[in-house]
Length: 517
Image (tube, rainbow, N blue to C red):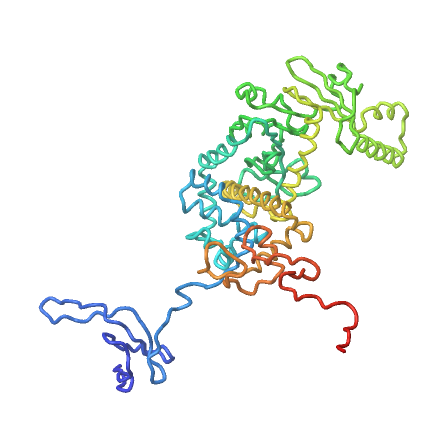
């Protein structure tokens, strides 16, 4: 269809042509620039049209001036993504040493989204990726549901790179640090993988699970490595495999009774820098043979009033016995309550039990100060807090995947999320923010801080690139070092300023002025 003459006569840039799109609307008559000339053999050269630079509507030429759909959003959610980014520099560096740059960025993007949007599904991953600064920190990640599924399978199949990443972290552990090892169970009722099985808690939970073992650096207060085992695998049988697969060679392993040192005898011989501190059962014959219940002193600086005894035994090992007054009272009260309820109290059984109420005995291959050994195991509860955050705050109590490789890849990303969460909690606790709000409320507040995409790299509270951010959110950003605070004027001195005697006028004589006679 020919272009109407009144359209062609509208003033427009030179070297352009009007094209009729054929559909009614304001963009029907498009103005395209000339891109060059197309030469035809045995024919006249023909002009070649280029891109659309505007439209003719209502008798005037209207330039494009940039399309929002092509350039992307000009403002994104900043605070929560920046908080996770601020504690992840070394994690990304370790990933880049092992994985291609695109895969490393995709791992960090998914791990960050699982932190700032707990219980997020694969269908919603791309949406929140594009609306937060995660897409600016880790560009180029393809996060559609099908792409994520394929990526998790690929990540799970490449076990050598996962192993290399964990070994880098394990090699960085200082020899004097204490490593807590424990496992947790996650619901996984998949029928297409071999890791899902009924655990020893199946009678109570009524579902199949997988077992995830974690190694936790007590001094650094963050996980070192993790590994997935079948749900019906007991901790003792997975102990040696976990140490070998992740090549843990230094530190002092602080474990519970489910990880006996007899299971890692060969690994300890091959790794002279690796030691252990493990509790033994209360009916262990070595307790009576070495008279471990004859305590020799009270630990100083412990609020629980703990008695202790240390004794060397055969094989170059040591036994450490402790009796907590608080735990002894609680155990005795619980024991008497059960006997009263079941009406089966026997004096001889009570006397036998009474001596070991609140008692815990450790075996170690190192000569440690009794107070340091007790504090090491007392700090092991930090790993339980990690599992609590893992299942509650991050909502990772279910695997949400089916295949074996997808499960391994997903748990690897969950490990990254757990490390970042531990660091974020520690940073927020050090600034005192967790005394005012909970961790979840803090992430909600930070997510409400939006920032322009073309803003300066170093944010400042007064730089004018923020969108609908409240004052108390700025206070949280400033406390976490995510925004440069506004310089405050120096405080003024209290009271009236002192006068300068040099500038003062001479004082008038006291009293009524004398009359001039």
